[in-house]
Image 1 (cartoon, rainbow, N blue to C red):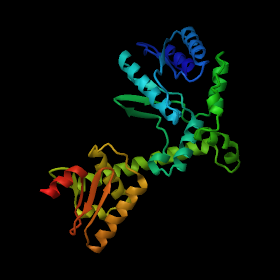
Image 2: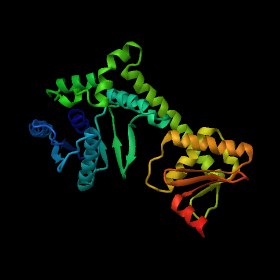
Image 3: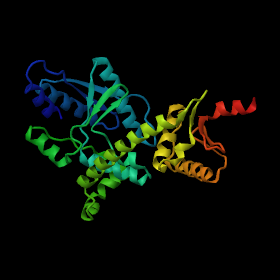
Image 4: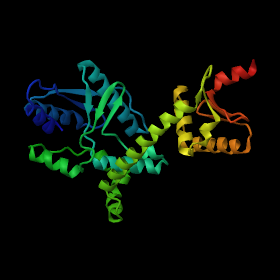
Length: 301
């Protein structure tokens, strides 16, 4: 990425973009300090600013990869704020995308999860850009070698105690059955396209069926005439809008939507708790989503 971005910037005419390279030293391996210095040397040779961002403090005994990822993004965002960067560019490639899709498939993710990582997305008021998301890692490695850079291999990428590594090690077997990284990457693109279309329909349904409410959200009975996927997304969006701070489990959400639709067909009332909220349907079919604490207060008075 350093070599390509440096070449891209030099090829521009007029005002050149300011590029800064950040290396995250997680402090998990003794070699990391030496590796960070090598990146600094390469960045200097390309005429790029470079900084080492260190993950300090105690490290967790479990979930180390997830914790390292959170720390990495936090460090990048903090540094981006300091230098007033407009975007953070990441070198994820199609093999990373394939592993992400497989991990989410194993976790039971829905369509949005199977869309994998986005090439461009807004995150905490900054753009995350992944320009190499459709390219295989072998091509990027060859590009680095052609630029006189020797790729550094992290031994943790071969440690089978991590789910991502186990899926990576199964890659050849999956490819023999046609489930190659490129096809999984293509699947992610198709899922993202379908997810974007469904979100547009959800926007319309949310606005058309929403009723006035003193707190939380209320929707007209016509919402339940929409396809189940749209009903699910409307309720999911309302739950997020409550900012109750709890993740919405997809399987539990599906069970709640099924209960709402069933009650609507029978002309009955129904009430379920989900992610710190109360989701209910009245006999007339009006759906209400309210923070659980607020609802309890209203019932007691």
